[in-house]
Length: 270
Ligand SMILES: *[C@@H]1O[C@H](CO)[C@@H](O)[C@H](O)[C@H]1NC(C)=O
Image (cartoon, rainbow, N blue to C red):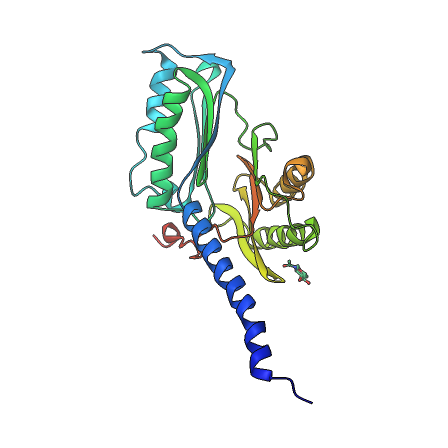
């Protein structure tokens, strides 16, 4: 015997449509907010000391930060690492834009980061600043070919993951797969980078991994695995988290946060 199929269908459909509408709005709102370039954190390396106006150090500093032209391939690649000077006047400069941020977006993040760094750490030789779309470090320590374990930032969502739906293994699985992909693709584009998403029940998880190009693929993997373990307390069971460093970074969210368009390595064709 049939019991009013149209009635029951309607009753069933309404809550589902309502849930879909709410989800759609939620994703839209959050993602549009997060496409902006947010300031996250900064550090003045007090133990590296300060420099005097008119000193050799300042001359080196001006040399290293001034001449980055708008069309520089550094911005196309999304990264620039350079060293200048020696002894107390040595400057190690690292700009690392997020893997999907290049060209004008990378340049704009750099300009913002540089002026904020001057303002927040005036006169300090060593300083570092984290934005959503780039990291900038100026330091007196030559550490370019080593994994930097000391200056990582973890930012996580205060909300707990819906534990009855998802577990850490869901995002870890995606991060591990992306790591494999980033390592396989190599660092020809200026850095190791992979981003992707995976469907989980009603939701999507979005993630990215990134390593600096100066690391070997072995060190890239080592850096990511170390940071996942080291920041367990910060990342695990959260509805999204990111660990951002000079050597490697990873992030996962329940909303899209990266630009889809793949980087065009124009500089390779010139
Ligand atoms: C990770 O890769 C494995 C092997 O290719 C695959 O079976 C699995 O579905 C992938 N998981 C995610 C979350 O991408």
